[in-house]
Length: 379
Image 1 (spheres, rainbow, N blue to C red):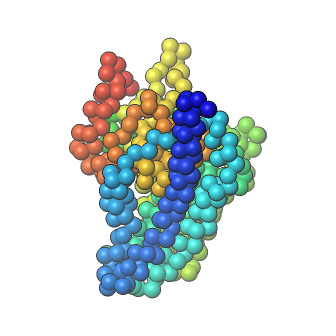
Image 2 (cartoon, rainbow, N blue to C red):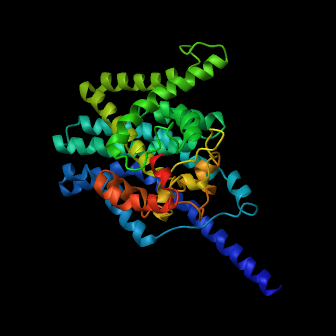
Image 3 (cartoon, one colour):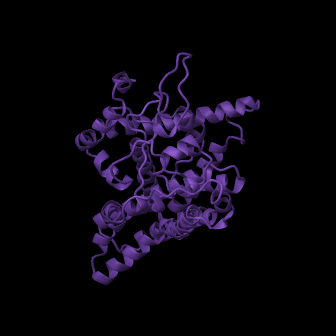
């Protein structure tokens, strides 16, 4: 064996070991489902249950960013010929995302029963609901992975998971709207240069909800069906949400209704904040024919911090996801040409909620990206 062949074999072996380690690292993405139980038990053991009720937020926005800095970035890409075919056949990756659906449903009922037991003070109860809502926001990320797939099991599982946080419109609008119009003025989920988070959120809530119904109406009319047909999938998914609301109300009274709606609001707000940072200030250029250039890895912000990446099923490799939307999370790639966020999503969310800090960090990056094409900043 030549020296070159030995080196190649060594590199291949090392890559496969690292990919195997990364494979089982995705179990970290299941931690949010058990975190509320763990923080409740820690609160009971220390007599500080109201303080620990806020623990999910502390874990996401304090512990994870610190560990991101300590662990560092991950630029490992699977080889398209040697690794990807086998990785696509492994059921492990698919089972993790599917398992989230029943697990979150169980978590919701259990968390509400804990709240109804009266163990929390008012501020502790608020922290508990916020914690469950944050887990729900992470669940939307799992649903995001599922609804992009072709198989009925996964797409239905994604729709059900979205119904648990009353955001079923995402299933339609994200795939048929956002991915078509991303990084253009037509997309409510693509934030513009110098647009604050608080300017972005109201339009994201309203436009994405309405656009989902419009897109579904268009689909049905093409089949010569009424938008009010039982074939309208939004009717079904929002129907599930309504049944959940009724169930929680009947079982737990007004507190059950408030809990279900509040955790939903926190969950989909977290989603829209992530949308805000994923495309901030990036624009697809308009061509002479009036159309926009095709979506490439350069139209989404990327972040390769290892822990957050496995925690979010590689959502931070957003550039590859938008360029190749059907790619499963385990084979998403890092692209050197993609613009890079300076930190993981948790840290960037904290910056986004303070617009002066966000603009101070991100505007120079956007301006540098469009150096020589400053007209793009106003598009």
